[in-house]
Image (cartoon, rainbow, N blue to C red; front, side, top):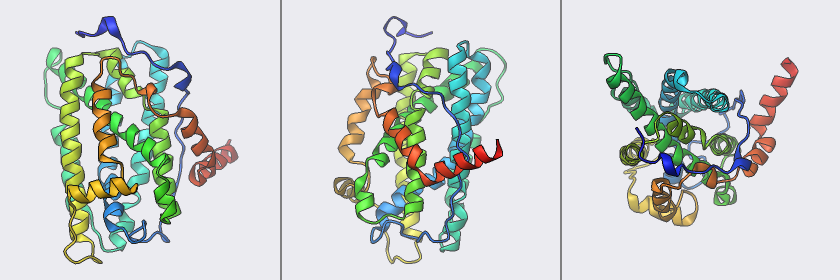
Length: 304
């Protein structure tokens, strides 16, 4: 099984809170195509989230429902159920942006069809005999999700602190979607890693699946940004390059390249635990002020 059992990563106990899904909704009719004014590249690079997350987070939910019978810790089971509820809501919220993009002349279907194939076919269930092979494939996907969640938590922490987006007049509805989602990613940032450690914990698997996840995310993100820039009806000869990404990172409208690279050895450290990064208090504070989250809370209380 694991070659790291004697040196388990230690969570920060104060960073753990019960998780709940917030049934948010957003209205997109007043959101412009370039919701970060004058910056189509940063807009579209962040817009790739709307292409990847609906299928990706449905896949998370599907895999986690399969792993529930393997969970022997009741608190972790509750965390996973809370994670499932939040991820299902994230998928729905980002999916609802896609019709708005179509109305503005950007049909994402050619790209989202490829993403659907990736998660449903390449990473989906396989016809494997019960026993070792089927268990191996389940553990591989659990480890992949843990690696991906390292980066969704990184992005969540970034957007909660990305004041340059405010200074440049980012559309408030889009900014609330991104920060609501980012705050919940920070809230549940330890769940995927804790689940992986609980059901498997093999360090070699963690490293291998990190390499797969990181490579796939870089490839999909640059491909998505290029798709948006090339198909934006308001741009002529729109392009997306790594140099553009680096420049936007230095300007503060996208995550910095250096910060992303420095996150790699942290995840690969044998002592790594997600609770050591980000701030649950900051995430909870944003969720208490988020217009969408507050409206969801009011609706829930009204229905109670």
